[in-house]
Image 1 (tube, rainbow, N blue to C red):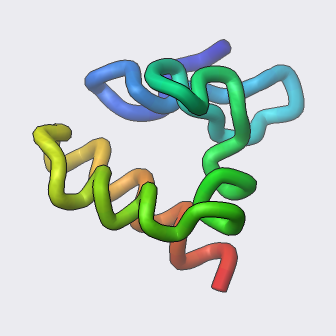
Image 2 (cartoon, one colour):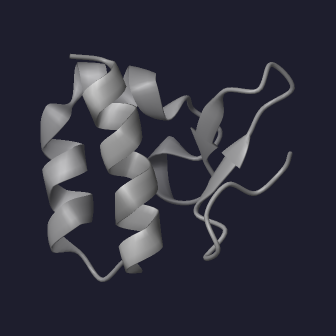
Amino acid sequence: GEIVDFAGRIALNDKGEEIFTFGKYKGQRAEDVFRREPSYYSRMMDGDFPLYTKKVITEIRLRIK
């Protein structure tokens, strides 16, 4: 699908929803992962991801509160 962040860590699925393109949650919706495992968001924010990727996941995280 279409890439959302410059690093290519987040893409859109065929429904236009953000999905992860890497790691143990590859292919899963970011919203679902953050709902199920909020600590994954924290780990990504503490991790070695580009600022823009962190901006994108923060927007997703804020949307589900």
